[in-house]
Length: 255
Ligand SMILES: NC(=O)c1ccc[n+]([C@@H]2O[C@H](COP(=O)([O-])OP(=O)(O)OC[C@H]3O[C@@H](n4cnc5c(N)ncnc54)[C@H](O)[C@@H]3O)[C@@H](O)[C@H]2O)c1
Image (cartoon, rainbow, N blue to C red):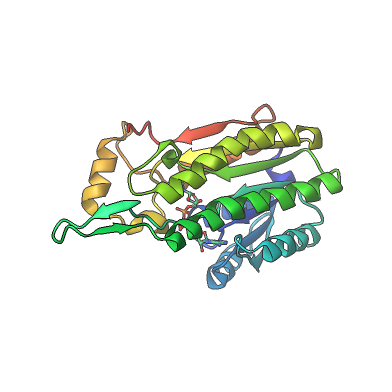
């Protein structure tokens, strides 16, 4: 698929990688429907891309709300005159050990239901319903060829302190295979990207010691930039022979 023929939704587009992907897509001539819970961020994105070759249409979207997912997909279809893609990017972190012992008091605490569910609701259920409603729209309108890109993570292999995040990102990677098989009759390809640590607002809060340890485990010797992941998004959109696979873009990170 050509970038300038994309009529594509980007979720989590108000900042970080989502804002970067939406901007790159619009600069390449694509039409983009950008959704996020952060409406001020969406407005800033729209303002910053006014002179792009393509166009960005923005609207508030909470992917964990089934009604908002449905109405956002309808909005995107109307605003762009059709729909042939999704960058399924919205995501959150609520890190913590499943069971933790306090070093001083010896007290045992556990991950709360809320901490588990918040990540599952957005990173897994929300991402899944985005795929469901986008593909239903494409199938209904016989709008293929089309492409879905799921944002998984290197954490899908397992990572201390991220039971909730790991569960969601592993499921998204697995369902990338499932959905590639299910949606082939609709001419919809499904790929995923599993980034390593990328410089965005999500990772800015990480303490220096943990960051240094992570960089030491990256053969390329640096944290990734949104541009590194954009190259993967562009590849999956453009390569018609890519489906049902996960691209690891992590600088060779060793566990
Ligand atoms: N940064 C990294 O190192 C890294 C690594 C691997 C995977 N990822 C994944 O890449 C994606 C983008 O990450 P990022 O680093 O740009 O994060 P970020 O925190 O900078 O941006 C995430 C965006 O998602 C939005 N969002 C949160 N909840 C939402 C909801 N319910 N509905 C709609 N939008 C919502 C936020 O408002 C924000 O604009 C995420 O799925 C993340 O899990 C990030």
